[in-house]
Image (cartoon, rainbow, N blue to C red; front, side):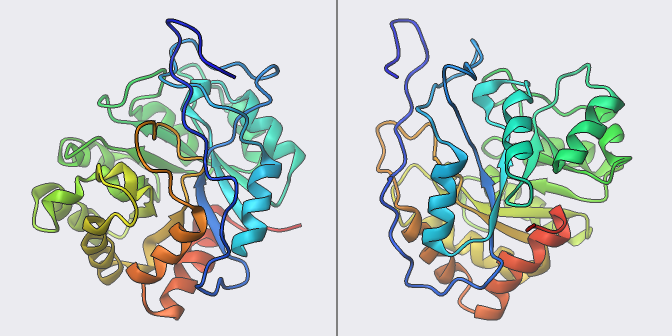
Length: 297
C-alpha cells in the first residue's frame, strides 16, 4: 500500500521473522501494548493520521505471540483510525479471550457506547498530550468519569518531558488506575534525576499510577538495545514492580529512517531490565490481569 503524493508516509513494517527469545516466557504472559490495522480496504485510515500502515492483523500478532510464548495481548486502538472504534470492536468480537482493548473515544461517546465496548473487552480509554499530532483524544475529565463508572482505567501518553504539566489533572481524575504509556515518554537521555522522571516516581508513590515498560524507542533516538532506557527501567522496577506491565508496541509505527527491532530481542531486553525471574513473571502475568481482567476462553 504505497502512499500517494500529499498523503501521510507508509510506516516501515515490523520484522516479520521474530526470533524465539533466549529468555523463558512464563505461562500466561501478556503483551500489554500493540496496535492492529487492516484489511485496509475495509478499514481506511483517518485523513488526519500522520501515517498509514500495511495490514497488521490479529493473525499476524498471534503468530508473534506463539513465537514469543505469550498468551494474549492488549490492543490499543491505533491512532491511524482516529477516534473510530469500529476496527477495535471487530477485532475484539472475533477474538474473545485472546485480546483486550484500550479505546480512543470520540467526544460524544455515550454510556450505551461504553457498555457495548465493555462487553467486548475494552478496559481503558486512551488520551494523549497535545505534543502528539493526529486525530487523537486529549485529556477529558467527563469521559474519564464515564469510564470510571465501568471500572476502566485512563491511559495517558505524555510527550517528551511534559508529564509534570499534566500531573495535577491526572491526579484529579476519579479512575482507580491511571496508566502511562511507554515509560511516560520521558527522554532517556535525561536519566533518573530529571524532573519529569522524579515526577513519575512521585505519581507511582500515590498507589494509583501504572507504567508500561514498552516502546523504549519512543524515549530515545537510538537503535536497539536502547541502552539509555535501561536505568529508567531498573529504577521503575525498584520503585513499583506491582504496577508495571510490558508491551512490544508492535508493529512499531513511525520508525521510518530507524532500525526496526526484532520482537524476540525486545522480549529478551526485558530480562536486562528485570533480572529477577519472579518479578518478570509478576510484570508479564499477574499485573496484566490485575489491570485488564482475565484472559483466555
